[in-house]
Length: 176
Length: 176
Image 1: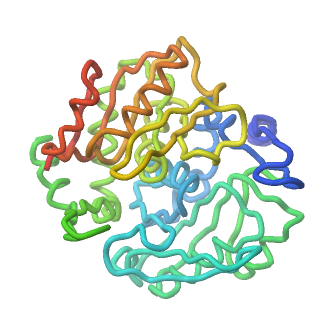
Image 2: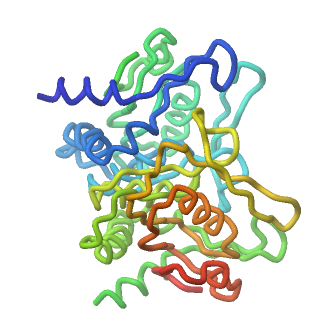
Image 3: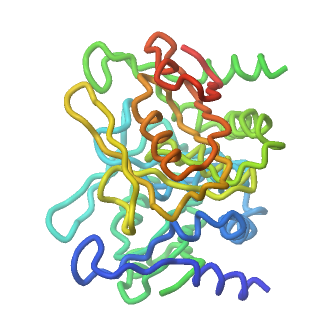
């Protein structure tokens, strides 16, 4: 049953060559999002795994991560904690830096957003090289909270992002 | 009942002076989002108004709009359509430009995302001068779809954003 649903979700992802630059095959989730049933199925599939895990807070990275993150926080009765690029959050922050192909980027979370007792679910749309999610894990661990799960809509398996996340419970709905 | 809830939601918004620049009083929604009950109350308050309106698609602007947009699409059984800054969407787009204090900015939506028969709910976190939402309305109208409602978490009343949205059904949960 759920395998059939997953096959249909995977078939709904649009693949666009050479975006954002030559040689990249971009996996476009907007063709899944614009199908109400498929959006609901995706959220329900992930939420089902966590409904008895007492998740306090869903953590997601801007911008696409907020779409599933917001829906899952609502569905699980959890709070929503945004991780943002440097300079967007107005109060005191924790930050973590990660490597890009050229240079680095910095993610921030409000220092008062996560407590040491919190059970956390991290949600993002795409696991590629894993840099942003690894930085997100570092931010959460600075607060002492427990990472109960890390869930992606899509995993690009050949990029080995999971290697950066060794020791964490990682899963993805769709694998390419 | 719901007035008491709205007062509590309003009290949970953190106000930060001089962010992102001197003279701006920033209304920080992260202090609402990190309270699971308040996040749920906000989504339920908005969803209640639209539960019998047969909304096909929830449209939201990156990045903060995606948080409530994703939750509301899920709750209403609707699709989710992201509006993004120029250059982020990989397929063929419609676009609309709006004025900033200095210069202009451009929003895009995938051309295949919205059809002429669709009933649309637009969701955003903040109504300030109304520029981004006005541009979003223009994008939706290019597709011929019907804008059933425009919902904000917060309206900054003195900035008169509603004047730009005359003729549309606009509402906000919290007014400052």
